[in-house]
Amino acid sequence: MAQGLKGKLGALALVLVSTVLAVLLVEGGLRLALNPADFLHATLIEDRALGQRIEPLTTGHDALGFRNREVPAHAEVVAIGDSNTYGVSAPREGSWPHQLAGLLGSSVYNMGLGGFGPLQYLHLARVTAKPLKPRVWVVGFYFGNDLMDAYYLAQGSPHWKDWRVTAGDAGGNTAFDQAARTAPAKRFEGLRNWLARHSLLYSVLRATVLPRFAAQEREQLVRQSAPDQQWAWSDPAQPGVRTVFTPRSRLAAIDLGHASVREGLQISQRALTAIQAEADSQGVKLIVVLIPTKERAYCAYLKQMAAPLPANHVSLCDAEDRAKAELTQSMDAGKLRYIDAIGALEAKIAQHVALYPADSDGHLQSTGYGVVAQVVADAVRRHAPRP
Image (cartoon, rainbow, N blue to C red; front, side, top):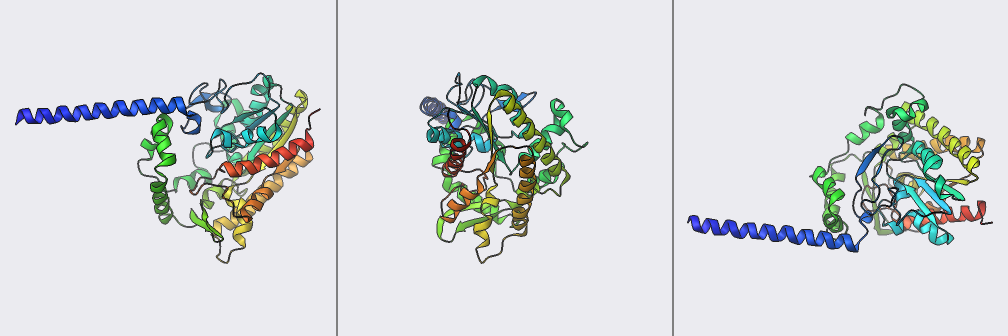
């Protein structure tokens, strides 16, 4: 009996070792064949000015830690922004800076990263972009969290303490933090996040084999949530176009009735003015592209429907417009050149084009980034033509 158990344990050990070796071989092969930056969640390191950044030359990122094949000696255009400029929810070639390069026939260097906001944009313009000697900077300003990112960095970083407007709260008790804490958690979220940072095999499976299970989980999470928190929607004219809206958290990040959002707007206005001054000193043309939240991009189309919107979604539509009006008024006063992507996005939504993922992710996907790229390309040709 002992001999039989020993044999079974030996067979089990052999199976386990063989499985581990097979997984390692597949993992290694995928890393040779694919761009890790298209699949892996990057591991961030601390940075005094930026807060966090990607460690250079890791997970498919370049020597500066950005999502480019390499750091060029010169770039005609430098795109500065957050995760919407980085191109989350799309491969590197689907990001709007990469698509912009194809439209312009010019070199475009992508300096976007999730979690960045207006103060990071200022630092990148002053320090990191300068050696590339670009003709144009395009700053992607995202209403979904840029105001809060400006607030948090000023409040939490000694490097930016002079930008604080008030003795605010960077300790996780803002309305935006509270809204985030009410969101239902995914099962095994910690393990899944670790695998998403370290395993290319898991990330490829997540993108190819697991979407069906993700859809089931998405439906379950929506059922657990109040409509003001998140709600699932499909286009009545094209049911295959579907997404999940998260109006509560988006509203908390854009409602100027919250002191933290108001302060974030003040910091953002000042930061954009400083970026323009830096552009003037370097002889660079600055264009700011305003990128709406997914919820705001759909407001006009949704209001045509017979069914009423959740109250938070209605409030968000108005709150984002108010914040944009104050920001653009400040940019007009400072003679900053800006363009608004919302009109082009609304036109595609009215044509039943899927611009966003089917889940609660607020980022555009490749088709949506293509719309932003076209808007930016038109502006670059109009305001910063080649000499």
